[in-house]
Image (cartoon, rainbow, N blue to C red; front, side, top):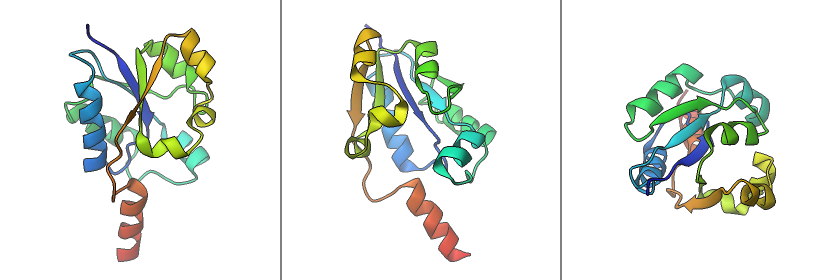
Length: 144
């Protein structure tokens, strides 16, 4: 049985940690379809209070060219991720294990009851330690 996992994010400065994450997501689809909800530039600026190094269209192209992602949708709900999630009707949401120390439910604006009602599971994918977009951005800024 093929599965539809859903993940969302900014995927700025696409690097091997993103690649590792998406590779694992793709493996667990069982020949299904991996869908990514990509944050818009406006969302990133408003909620992360940073400007993406790559604009939305560049980030979209990188995801599609990675050959790991079957479909990219725009995060149309902004901070209310339920709108984008329901447009996909995934079997589960995949997130990095680094998110287990943060209130992911609050960040995504849903509850476990909402996930259960919509038959959506939540899977944590091992985080690639020692590297992040934040670290890459900082390294770049220090060189300037």
